[in-house]
Length: 315
Image 1 (cartoon, rainbow, N blue to C red):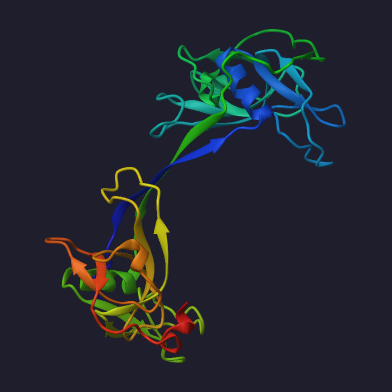
Image 2: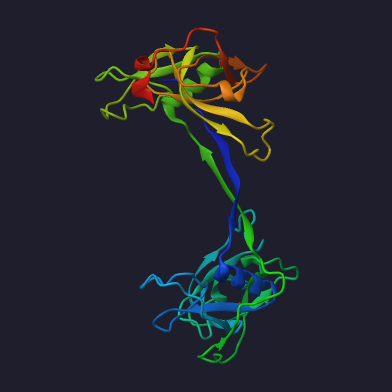
């Protein structure tokens, strides 16, 4: 059996979203050291606020201001903070029901250790020194001995100068990926500028990249089959938004390509042809970058377009 590969992998992208009136007021309020909730149809104050009642689905907009103090309803200790977590020292994840709220807010508690945390303890907000209109404007919660604040929060208009109307939330996932026997063999073949798949012993279809089992029949696959290198564009899209840290000018074309001999289309970028001339049935071949372990892009071969009936099952 060939050695199975393993490597760290990071999936990261910025998620940009616009805000409606309720979320805009909530995040702008945090920037101004004000916590807002919204009153649901049954009178419950929801924090963080939502724009639609979770029970009736009615639109909500009755905003109220809450105290910066509350009670821990449940918690879990984090002894080893990870990258970009709110605190770089051990802390507790907590659900805090702010005074006057009917729901709990998830955040972190700065405490000396797990023995210093308990359900029912009183806490207050520690505001960040620099606030931009994000949940991180609450730096953390901290222990605070006090009596509960007013049970009936005051009405708030939700109006602030220079409201926050959109946010960018970075998403990142760090993990170690082990591709397994079949995909390890596929990756190693790419080092030799070959593309290999595996044939199902039952339906005889060849899958690229191989999965180690047939997704249709559910039986294990082991027979390696070299496919390509040429193939056919089955479908494609034109990318008009430039990705961060990707040195490719837009617009460009990303396509599904059925390599000759394969029964599954794989992804690849199409170059060497104007983006508005790429079409279904276009015959293409791989272009390898010097020293690269994968195909950089595919370019037209100059052959006549493939007949639709030859690839229609792969669209």
